[in-house]
Image (tube, rainbow, N blue to C red; front, side, top):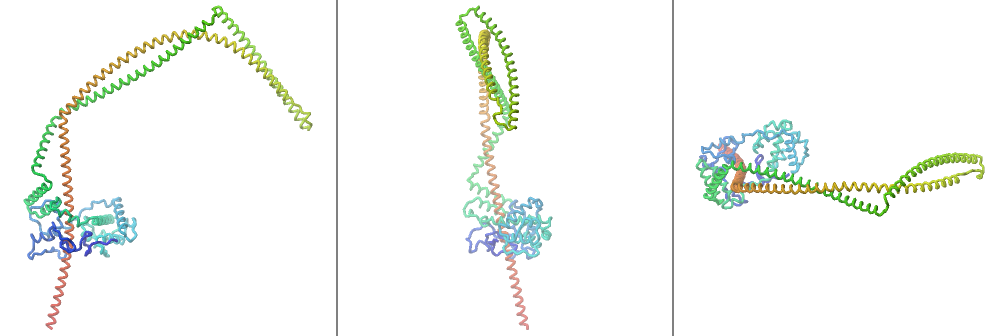
Length: 624
């Protein structure tokens, strides 16, 4: 468990960590003497509202010291000081600590409760809580578990704190002293683990841990008295001094004087002259006039924008038309290439046919035969074909006869082999010698092979004769057919060549005409678009350039103003936070002094009572 650095701290009294235990009079021996810009506690009351004997009075509540005006220092700075007379301290102090806000946190939300439980468990584990803690324990804790957890957490604020047995009366007083924003009734701690009271108690523990973490992270000495106070001129110092002066102002005139003095100091610190402010204001007015003049040209601007959009649409249409023309030209070029390839193929075929014709004419010339001889050859070929057909029919008949004989021989050989097998089986059954066995397989096989060889030889000779006859006849017929077909194809190809040449010429003429038309249209469109673009550029130069410059200047000035505003708001926020922290330190010091004075008063009363008792005893002894 960590030990607090608070010195002579009492239960229920809060002090910032790492602070000195001696009274904050800036004159102790352990500290360097330093000028304070804060009024001492009770100084204003002594000068303005002092009692008849020149000492501060406690409130009418007897032993309870209520906070003085210094407690509400940060709150009073949030609103302008009133020009009317101030209320008495008792009237102000009677309202302190009685205002309680409504609970705004979602304490019944399961996610909020889970987050609070995680935070409490993390705090307990990190700071060395010696008792076992579980998540189930923090969901429905007992009074003992809650007392141990609260005592462990609060000891980080007061290391000598010891929880009483009836903590339901003590904890609300502690929370009120800590200025807990929500009022916690006594009944919340009587049934601490019940479902309707535990969420608010859990949120209170979460808030207490947040206060401890903030007090650990905050160095009050460095915040209350930074090193910048030692400099002669510092904007933060000027702001603090002005806030203190405003706090002590009574009338509206004093407030205006403080504001005027603060403005002069800021101008002197920022090195800004009134002439510069006037010049900037005049420049802003001039820019606003120019903006108003430019806004009057909205109709002309709208018309130019419409023309510009129309020109852009025309350019898009022209570009689309050009793309279509290019695609059409590409298709035509592809067709021309295809036609050229077809023409090349026809020309190559035509050349091949011419070569074949020349070769055939040469062969015809080399034959040296007359027409009668050719006719005789044709007749002889026809007769040979008839004889060949007859021979083919005869060969087919012979083949069928041979096949039939072969089938009969095969069947006979099969029956013979079966009989031989039966005979050999009987010989083996009678257990006779091998000489009695019969065989005819070898002779039959030799006969079969010889017959096959003879038939194959005859068939090959017959096929060769037929082939020679057919080859001669077919060669003659093919030559005649080829000659006739060559002549016809030659005539057809010559006609196709003439047609293709005329078509190719016509396509080339169309292509040239189309290219010329496209080029002329493209040039006209480009010239027209260039004219439109030049007109648009001139219009932009004449009307938009000045407007763009002014708009840019206005945007820059707006950004500068926003930056200055953000800086001013940030500085105001930091100043208010600083003053609130200073107020907290002063309040703690005042509470400590009040308690010390109460203690001193009790001691004095005790001493006076003892003296009175001694005097009474002495008088009684004298009387005796």
